Length: 314
Image (tube, rainbow, N blue to C red; front, side, top):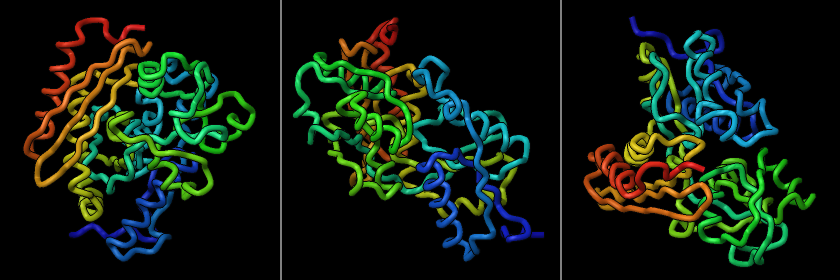
């Protein structure tokens, strides 16, 4: 017997963090599932789950753990059967899922670029020598210190509104956000920003992508999600996440990576940076779109060999 579609009586429970951006991503997932299957909004229940990364706001992310900071409690809830799927920002996702869970659905990727945000200056090029810039990302911090060692970089966490308030209070003169986040929040006109081209600041692996996690045994939900999966995004992330896996990447390792599809070919660029910004190593590879995972692994191996032991040590 075919399992029934979600309904107001038996809704599909969507797990998510409670930030405005996380909720926007959960609502986008819900809207796509509604459209794909002709379902009402009441056939879905959005379940907000607070993660360690949401609870601990007074310390840098690198001090309190790796990428699981924004996922563990949500994944625990899914394994316990309290939710049916989980919606994640893929740049926050560990490369391996807990036993019993899987990722095989990605929504169409948004703008991958970082955004320079400031109430004082229109672009990073305008930032004067010795200015204070805030970021909680070790990747952005290392990339910034590599290109602009004169700048003073301070810890800067919080949602968009919190960061704008910190800028107004002059905790820092500028910060960075993801263009994808500003787009999904509908805040491109509200936040003074300038997109940073990927040639100037390579984004985090999987930046701009939304992933939907489910239980391995829940094949029916897998069929529901297959209708909204974006194949091209999946191919790109296969390469980028294999690159990250090969470097054992976490929130404590400054790594950038981006795969782009063009004419059936996959173009992958990767970067690792010493945490103090003193050295940056890059690589580029090109191949068939179906070979993305192998390319990512090869790129990681190349950079590991060039970097040698201790490259990421503070």
